[in-house]
Amino acid sequence: MSATMQRGSAVRREAEHIYQTSRSLFEVGDQESRAILPEEQGVFHVQLAALLGVFAVGRNTCAEWKNSIFRGEEEFSEAGEKMMQEFFSIWQSAASLFKERAQFYGRHGLPIDPLALAELQAQMNETDNILRDWTRPGLSQALALRSRQLSPAGETKLRELLSEKR
Amino acid sequence: MNVMPPIAPQVDAIEAGQAEVWLYFDAHNDLIGFGSIGSETISLRDGSKQRICVIPFLGIAAKFQGKPDGPKEERYSRRIFEGLIEEVRRRGLFQHVFLYVDPRNPSFDKFYPAFSFAEFDRIIEEGREWIIMHRSLIG
Image 1 (spheres, one colour):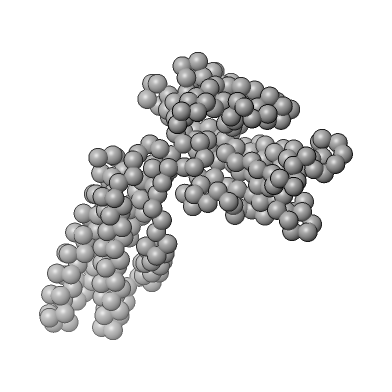
Image 2: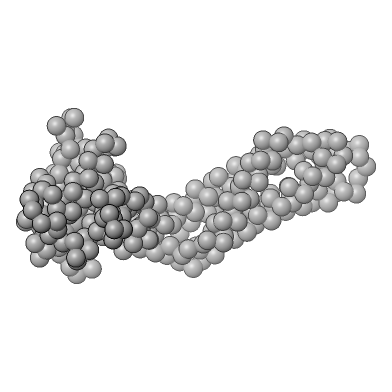
């Protein structure tokens, strides 16, 4: 498995973990008295930060994976594509939970940081776009955009060029 | 000549965010041609990687090839190509520009050398020989 696929697998697992733990946390919160909400809200903030963070890593990993295939550094695989798409789907499910829960806290007089909520909404919109406009990555049609090795003589010349000063 | 960045016929490169492509139109909104700037990764034998600037696409519509009549310097192909090189220089990110050309293409020993491009290396890709040409932007 390539480095980007390994990272993709890790962020998918992390998104799944956040989704599952949040579901448990928020279900318990619904049944409990209002007194424990401030404590739950504290955990919510930590979990929300993790969710926002894992999105950034997942998005970058997916972009690197697509670029790597485009440049011919990695072969396309349906398993890889499924994993990347699943990451965004799971993340989106978790984000919907967080959005609903933030509204719930608001109704109980415990508003969530509006900047964090704006970031959550922006990432949800981006995820919608990524999934809606998903294009399967493929090898660059342009030869000049594929990664390659030069001949030994070409590599020597390139090293000489790069060592020149402006 | 009007320039419209950065939509293009080379959609895969644009969608992948790996190249910028400019379309060039005349005053009647007829497409004259397109040109592009991108970057490529060279894997060196010590395991390191080096990014280089490439001009992956340059195309002139058939009816505009060799046009307009008059001095060669005024031709669309030259103005578009010169514009791409100037854009790379203006950005200041790379000191060298590379491109790939089929050795049977007359541009190899006529058009590109007129812009100070010279043969740099030869590669075989998908059973076909390609020449990598180089031009320095230093100085």
